[in-house]
Image (tube, rainbow, N blue to C red):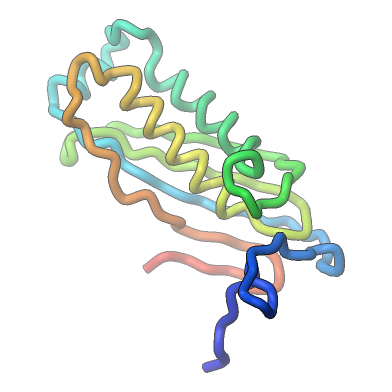
Amino acid sequence: MAEKTLTHLDKKGEARMVDVSAKAATERVAVAEGKVVMAPVTLELVLSGNAKKGDVLGTARIAGIQAAKRTHELIPLCHPLPITKVEIAIEPDKKLPGLLVRATVKVTGQTGVEMEALTAVSVACLTIYDMVKAAERGMRIEGIRLLEKSGGASGEWRAK
């Protein structure tokens, strides 16, 4: 197996933004997920639409979309990207109990959107927490991870 190198480090070991100017612009998609685990009564509060701060799920979707678009402002070495799609899906899971948050981000560009998908999920989960923390401070945000990515030189990748 070939040795992997950290592309954000130069030959001296100093942080750098990767030069992607020689890469071809291709369609790139990334999907990430995360979970907000809460008590069943808190989940019912969210699903009933009776949270004091308003529409929890709608607000979390908008927050996730905004976060994906601003990832380069939050993660120092990320490129600003002309994102063409951000979709945030939030599904109740009574087995957790809680909410499963999934972000799909797409771009036609010279670098991938994995960080944008992960950032979108993270901020959507944080927004859910913020909007219902008055009802339950012990909620947990868990399992934020990349599920799949496609496009670019490295092609397809899926989590096991």
